[in-house]
Image (tube, rainbow, N blue to C red; front, side, top):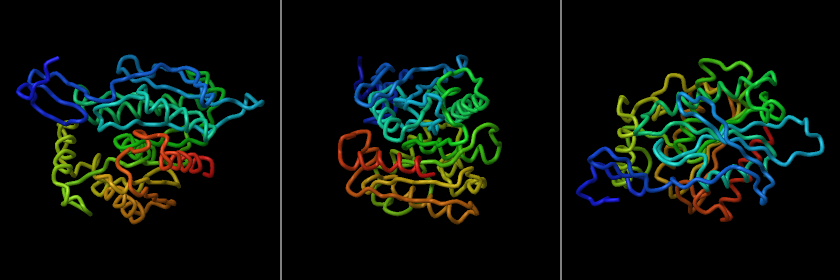
Amino acid sequence: MDSSSSDIAQDFSPSLRIHKDGRVERLIGCDVVPPGYDPATHVESKDVVISKDDDVSARIYLPKLDHDATQKLPLLVYFHGGGFCIETPFSPPYQRFLNSIVSKAHIVAVSVHYRRAPEHPVPLAHEDSWTSLKWVAAHFAGNGPEEWLNRHADLGSVFFAGDSAGANLAHHMAIRIGTHGLPGLTLRGIALVHPYFWGLERIGSEAQKPEGVAMVDGLWRFSCPSSSGLDDPLLNPAKDPNLGKVACERVVVYVAEKDLLKDRGLHYKELLLNCGWQGHLELVETAGEGHVFHLLDPDSDNAVSLLHQIASFINHS
């Protein structure tokens, strides 16, 4: 494969490159692992089709069940990160993370496979995520298309979570429930890990990081060419008139000290607490770490701690 610099139209390394002939070269997040039984966590997983026409699917997870196999468990809907352009629920880091969180929290999980930019520009990722939630909600009476959810998922105790772009999706899905409603599904909380929010005005330490800022600016315009710009409400919560309609009472935001997006997570906390939303928000900062460190080094003490914190957030809601 010829990937010489002369053939490259846009370079978002180390994530992806766009060639002058239009070819998209994803540099990471392309490996996939099959679903199945994980002997380390005793979690089972399988893949399901949500919308064949739109190529929306999911990987669902079931923990080792207690003696009472009819017990209903909290349901986590997870949205993967990757700038809306790379990664899938089927990549090794996400398979490992979902196996671990399902085992630790003893929950059922649905990890959403939405269509990615640039072939499918934002906001298609948001529309696919909403399609997935409507599919989940169809199981509320126990007669949906997926038996694992019919038998074991408590749709009265649902949580959304995601990292980076996936945290953006989790946030917007919580707002969409608040504005549109979703009968059959009760959202208890959202966990946003290193959320991908941005804006035109520089905040915090962003002005001291021009190369990183330029990369984020360019990636958004690339993934959402129809956007109104960096202050699009899809990207900048400060510009969203529906911010206060987040449809849950508990939110936790995780930020990392060395992450370029850290100040956006801090700003999100202030915005949500001052927009009329009547809930409880917790912010957790991890010292010495960068963006999505828990996926890059899952055995580190900080990654294990983050996993336990998310599990505790779900179990104590």
